Image 1 (cartoon, one colour):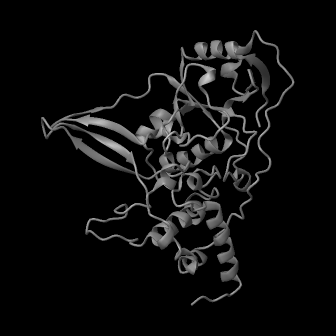
Image 2 (cartoon, rainbow, N blue to C red):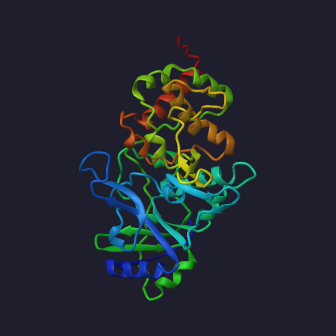
Image 3 (cartoon, rainbow, N blue to C red):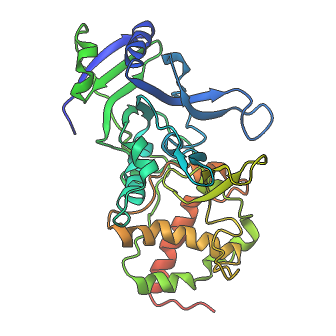
Length: 349
């Protein structure tokens, strides 16, 4: 952990700090949208540009994760005509994003998939990522379904600043020397922002250490129940901090069929057609097969590719967004039990 100085600022001083930052940075944070949720009168909490400290929602988990700043659900990559194209505009300013430790750690996984998955970096991801710094949000409250401690995502070393809301004031911990001058007029205080050390929910995160075990797990009867329970809507993957699947679509303008734009849109391995190949065939026809693929990719496939652990930070959003109340932690615990059965020689019909 980098050495950090802590300062205590009131709301007006925080707003003055944000005003100074705005000369160089666009600041994004979770913001409450009144009646913007799934049900009537439900609020949503989504990432938006902010100007003041009071806009930040500190006390509830955001509906969608931090990744939506770097990889929006829909993003225009470039515009084209018959014989030329023009790249969409990249952010003009640098970007500061408020996020909890789990969400900030999820960007390590995003970085691996977009920047280190082969020899070619994703240009449109990198042009944003190079501008981003993170402000760690204190996380003193437990949210339903969170299990960051079970996957080691409760701490991060990627933050430039850390902020703890203190009912009318804020503790600001400065890790990045680029921000030290903003606090030159303040005296440091003796306060350290602590990460969550224990979750109410503990998950026995499964470990699949070889392909033979992974293939045996594919045949385990635990997946059958999801044909009846899961509707394959993809809510779990859209709200996931680490999922990265997308589709690209050429949108042709109606006035001229040779002019249009190419968009990248968030997609999901849970929806029909995602695995459809040129011959018209799909590899995973049943919902249980799609759900099995998603779970085994997070637990085994990603780690087999990168050797950096699971593709999960325990944020709990997938379970929170599921309209069928399917619990991802419960699935993980069932998977751990299935591994014990297979290693113990238990046979299923």
